[in-house]
Structure formats: C-alpha cells, structure tokens
Image (cartoon, rainbow, N blue to C red):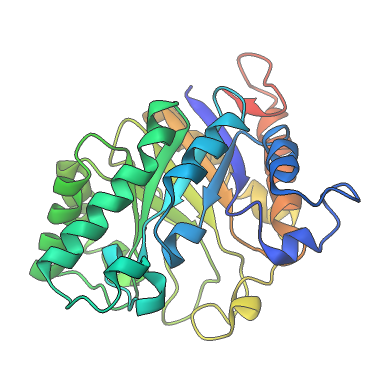
Length: 295
C-alpha cells in the first residue's frame, strides 16, 4: 500500500492561529511551520492562489521542514480562469494588457518560483482548482490540455467545482480525459443534496498520486461567506465513511494526500489528527502504521 499523508489546507490561516492549536507564545512563522511539520507530513499552500509565489519562500519552506515533508501548492487564480485583480500581480506586470504574453509570463514566474521546492523534494502537487463555471466541453478540454502541456513533468491534481464533471454519465469520460493528460483527479467531501454538490467519487487518474480534500459539510457551501462555507466540525463517524475510499486510492496510486479545508478555529487540524488516528488503527493492517506517515 502507498503512503497516505494527512494534513490541512493551511498552516497560517488566521482562524487556526487564533484557535489555540499552536503553543502559547509561538508567534513567528518559522516556529509555526516547524511545529506543524513535526505533526503532519503535508500541507497545502493556498496563498499562491491570491498572489504569485516567491522564490525566497520556496527556499525558506524547504529549509524549515524535514525530509519527506510535502507542500501541495494551489495554482494562481489567472491560471485557472478565475478573475484576477491587478493588485494580485507583481508590480511590473500591473497594467499590462491581458493576453497570451501576460499569461506566458505568469506561467513562467509560477514555475520558476516553485522550482526550489521541487528540487528539494518538497513539492507534493500543483493543485488546479477550476471555478464552478468551468463546465465540460471542448473549451474546457482545451484548457486542461494546455495546463498539462505547461506543467509537463510536474505533479498536477485537478479539482472541479461543477458537478457535471463527475455525473454518472460523464464520469468515465472525465476520468479518461484526466488519465490521458496525466492529471490526478481530486476527490472532495462537501455537503450533499445541494444543486452544486460535488459527488464523493474517488477515481484514480494518475498512478503517481491522488488527492482528497475535505471542505466540510455546511449547507452554505457554494453560497455563503468563507466562514459559512467551511464551518464544520467533522465527527469520527463522518471521517470513518472515507476510510475504505482512501484505502482504495492507496492501493492504486503511489502517494495519497488527505487535506482538510474546514478552516474555522482548529477544526481542520483536529479532523486531520482524527483521520490519522483512524487510518493508523486499522485492525487488519498488514503492519504497524506510524503516527505521521502512513504506509
């Protein structure tokens, strides 16, 4: 069975910092990352969605984390078709006309900034989370093919936000498309029964890795504020529902990342701790599982 790495979608979220999980008095970013990486083997960087990553940060993150630690990095908004504010661009790119040249430059800077992480063996996957209006069709297929071309040789995972991608009728075609492009499908846990609910499917479309993201089960998902959408405390029973699915992924891919995005107070880290414990205590496990890295 492959490695199962459990963590959260941020280690610097303001709600987490105020939630009491970090030791009192631990206020510096270096200390927080060392504290986090001593307890979990993977984390997602979401700040790179709002602004292009910095080369310096990649060097610092690699230096402050142990061997084997992974950073999953969320793609910049412009690269996934989201509206991007001029203020989110580097100063020298602001005011440039939108077009292929600007996109090319943004892609280049995105890859260059993350190269130190990849060189240090710390890069887990590049997460491309497409917006709800990114629906199945020829334009979307072309965009996915372009994404695969520009990230050739990099580990990439794709999360859709429109449920049609994983409807029963389209599911085989979506899985085949991602597989042909070498892109890993992201499985998600969200509230069910809503018009925009994503089904909890777990296709494996890339042998190298698979990703599961837990967004919480608040019924405000897709409509409320950020605090409303992600406000959920997972119960042990809710997490246990995912154990066979995660093990299924682990049987078919080399590495599975399980990430919690229910970022209210310390709910994400507590859910990650519980999931790690549930995976580790598997009664029929062929061998003993460690507390941080599960094999």
